[in-house]
Length: 455
Ligand code: ARG
Ligand code: ZN
Image 1 (cartoon, protein in one colour):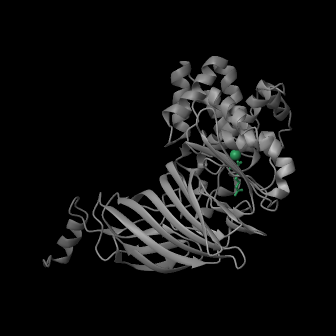
Image 2 (cartoon, rainbow, N blue to C red; image 1 turned 90 degrees about the vertical axis):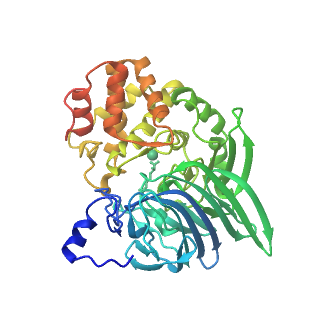
Image 3 (cartoon, rainbow, N blue to C red; image 1 turned 120 degrees about the vertical axis):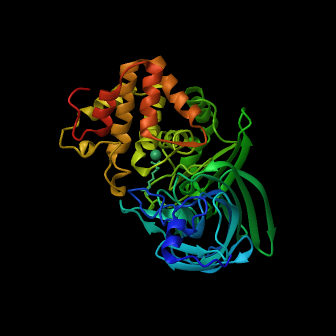
């Protein structure tokens, strides 16, 4: 509409509510630890990723179709994408203008998006992906290996291989179509819909139906021995093990049905229709990741790591973070699962694990910062988050008793299944189910610097 409005009145109207002029979406979701992670102004419902990877040259071709909804009127919006070359962007099949600005891909559709509007954005891109280096020094993202790629993304690396809203607060379903040289396997999340080989290349189609945070997506490529079966509960298992790791990995990985059965008994029903493992041979990576439905290991895992990554399917994957500061809700809980598994399988009790840690001197790095306030992205995978996070749960257990404690863990998984949650919500749940004021326990263990005075 070509109305002439005096400038001052125009500005007034622009801030006046429903008729407000569309403005650019924010470049970040507002996370203090990773200010550019995620974006403002829209919500992704689904990612359709079509990828081709040439293991010899390391070249990745990609086409990403995001189905999203504007949460306010937008003249432009950002996607997160680090490196790679973008060749075209369309919004609802109409060519859109775009520019790159660091990890932001800024998209300006031909027409502004209205608040509440559903839209599709298609990005065609390619290049040789490079992992990012996290604040703690770890490689993160698309990490090339001698036979393919180890693809992990916590906290930031998803943007090294697909454009998106790269923050766990925006969960979505995913479809993956991945083409790799024949003889090589591409393993993503969820259920394998099919595989087809033609002209020396194999295409794998994967579907992740339940909502997933972008950092939990994988498209790991390599030479793998594959096992497929169903558990007694009907969960579809797909395990991929690098033959070089098989001798050590198989005895652990083959315990998946037993481990999931034990975890379901404690935490409630397993949250996904698919499960499995990916054991790569990439020990330089230095960590494992709880990629949704199918944890990813850089080498044969110990049983305890295996229990940890699978426990994350409840704590982290199904119940996800709202802010990276709350990372203890993932790592403290998965570590506590290791303790409880040991306790119930003839190993040391959770209290003994607690006591061994509590014996550490006040100068130990274990007490460097409180678990629910790591201070920055550099600390989110440090021992206070894992170990003191788990110690907090042991303190909670001692305060409320075994029965109520287990009820709290299970209610946490149930009430926030496939959602996002915060530390404050966990504290409220624990107080509600125990009927106790737990303010001082949580203040001491989660938020107070230094070694707590009394266990
Ligand atoms: N969440 C992983 C675990 O199970 C750790 C990921 C570490 N990632 C990193 N970039 N340092 O403990
Ligand atoms: Zn973990």
